[in-house]
Image (tube, rainbow, N blue to C red; front, side):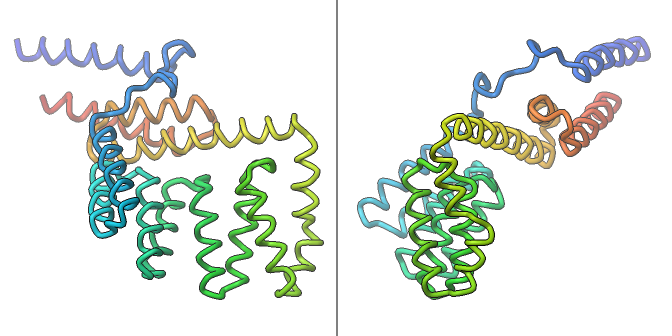
Length: 255
């Protein structure tokens, strides 16, 4: 009887794995349709409480809420950036820098952290470092975005002080590039779509990695499959899919 049950479970697993390895377009959960887990919702609630506390000048209370949000959702990139802002307000510039960098480690397309880091380095007098992050903010942002325009102005101002930067800007034609893209609506649309897609690919890949560490293998499988569907060349997503399959098989055999 035990062997029959084991055989039945193995058959079900094989059917599941075959169907998941070759998902049809219609079978994959679209990113917009996926319901966020309850912990993610709770993290967002804590972040909102942090914002209210911050607006009221209750900075220590805001820090507590932001840290709770991160504990519940380690991928809550907004909370990392928010912590950086509060620490900067409190004059703890090294901590502010640390959390802005953590925000970028979670999402390398997160534009507010680039802006905040550039402004922070400028405040600290590290103009070369500031220029580096202003340039990154300009390259990743849309030319008609007001924050991109502000970044361009900051970069121009620094170039008057740091002479070698002025030469570099001329060589790379960064300012001219921004102006030319501004006049090309089709290119703006194309850039925006590409950035949105890259953000989604990284978001679901990061989710899958966290799921794998938490031994939530079904969720890891689902999120990695979404990431791979958006980018078929995504080798990391395939590695997570393979690892999740392996762990599911092991758990099934143990039962």
